[in-house]
Length: 296
Image (cartoon, rainbow, N blue to C red; front, side, top):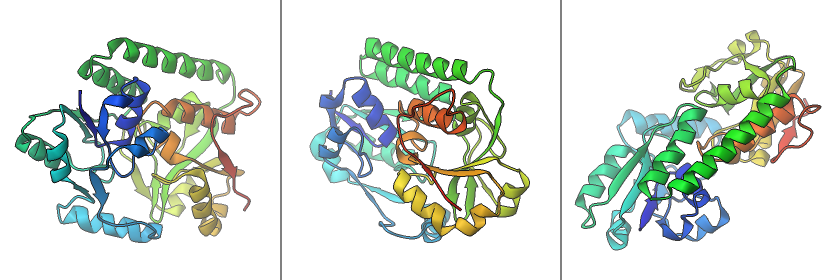
C-alpha cells in the first residue's frame, strides 16, 4: 500500500503500527520518527520560518480570514506517487492542509485514493484514531497492541498519583496572544494529578488574557507553545518572563509540545508521564522527556 500522511501525528502512528515502509510521502513538519524525515515532502508552509509569536498569530489569522490555508499541497508530487491512501485531519486549520483541499486533489488523482479523516479532541479519540488507521491499513493486531500498551501506561500514571493532592495547573499553548490549551491537554493534566484551571477537556484551545490567567491562581504554569520543542519553549518563556512572573505560580516549566502535547499521536502518553513527573516528582521520579524549569 502506498500511503501519504498529511498530519505529523498520523505519520507517527503509522510508523508505530509498523507501516513505515508503506509511507511514501509526508509533510514538511513530519520529523518523528527520524526515518520520516527521509520521505518525500508534499507540503510547504506559506508563512515561512523564524517569525515571532505575535507575527505568526497575525499571519495565521489573516490567511484564515481570507479562506486560505497556511499550507500548500504539492499536487504534481501526488500525481507521481499515485497513493492508495491519504491521511489528513479536520481538527485544526493551523496544523495541516485543509480537508477540502485534500479531498479535491484526491478526486483528481488517477489512483483514486481512500482519504482517511482524523478529528480527535480527547485522549480516547486519539486512541480511537489508532484503531481507525490500523483498520484502514490492515494492521489490526498492531493497532490492538499499540492501544493496549498506551492504556497500560496511562493506568500506571493514574494509579501512581491517585492519592496525591491535586495541583492547580495553567497550560499555555501560545504566549502572544495567550492561549489556554484545550482538547486532550486538560485530560492529561487530570490524569497526571493536576487540575486545569483554564482549559476544558475536549474543547478548543481558547484565547485568554494575562489577567485571566493570574485570576485562575495556578500553582504550576506549563509553557507548551504549539509545535515548539522544549528549548524553543523555554526561550519563549524567558521572552515573556515578566508576564509569567506576575501570575504568582510557584513554578513555571517549559516542555516539548511538538513531541508530547501538540500532536494527537502515540507520544501523548509520554506527555502524560512528563506532566505527572512535573506535578508529582515523588510519585513519578523519572520522565521520558524534557521539562525545563524557568527561573523568574
